[in-house]
Image (cartoon, rainbow, N blue to C red; front, side, top):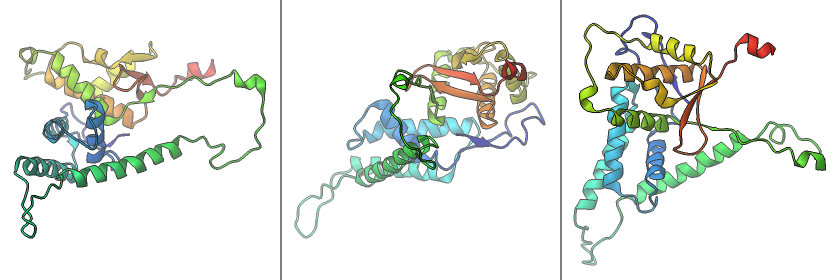
Length: 262
């Protein structure tokens, strides 16, 4: 889900130089699809003003979090602003017929989103297939005693944009005046990583919000969030939720040797 660099992670306590890069498959079209799903709007009738505002808010937050926002995110931001501007203008008049053209400025964006969504869903279906039946084939046997043994549905791993949105909700719950600047306090991502792993030693899971307790400093919140991203990149934790936009849980991805022996 996430890739990044660890240049300054363990070198110094300041996280300003630490950057997390987003892989190509989590691009601007993924963010737009996430916003459309979140707002429960018709993809054929996108409320461009509202979606553009939310998209720009995401880009601003990703920059603040030192996420490596690729140029394609900024290109899409310009495209959305251009579409928004065109929708505010009166329809252009066809000089030949004297009639107003009614081409929707959103049409090309909708076409791209639908095409991308189709290929993305097809990729998820192929990726979710088990090895047996995808690369290895066996003769099927109807065993009545096995029909009752249905596998339990596993939690779904959280995508990056849902995690960013959860972080936005955490910030929104805290009054602005409670944030304070602590000049002598340097909160390192390495310290937050250690703290998260220590808390998962005695527990199998943690609620996402539990990691954002006092002290209520913006530096603490950002360092915590970047620590979660780094642990995801290292595959030391899993970030999951049982339902879409539901409670987010932090799970251990690696068991202790003693647990494996048991």
